[in-house]
Image 1 (cartoon, rainbow, N blue to C red):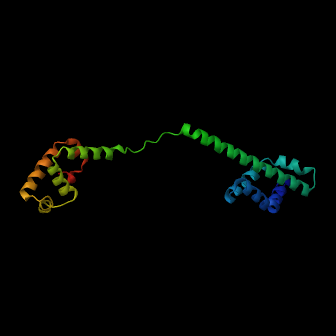
Image 2: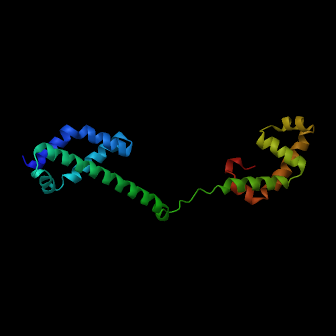
Image 3: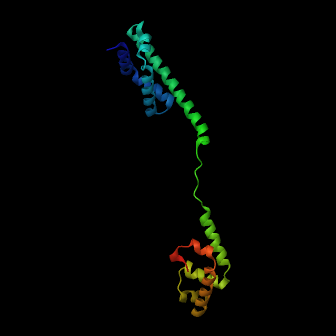
Length: 181
């Protein structure tokens, strides 16, 4: 087994909990601290010759202490780099983002306005009869009782009101076929 492998095993076996605690203090999150330690170990031991030089002149305990300090410094550097990268991304993301088109909410508003305008074109009695019939879903005899008029008069007002509404194409274009008067 190479010297750097022994050093890596010593760092992980003896100091991983302390390094995880240090990572938790940096990130504030146990899962992120594990990722940070993992990244730091990979980055620190990616070049075994550097770790071998770090610990070659000293005894094993001194080499381990220096390796742990090196991993800890690497963790801090990686954390700072990630924070800077994240900050830069959030500063520039609005410049890169494509504006999402919001659904057109004016349709129902325009429909409501068209219905209101068409109903305003009716006489008050016609409007009342149409609303009672199609909005309140009353029958002709029930409407006659409410308005205190004969059923024939109610039928005439409904007929005249519906004819006038049929002449308002903007209103009928928005209504489904089964709801058209």
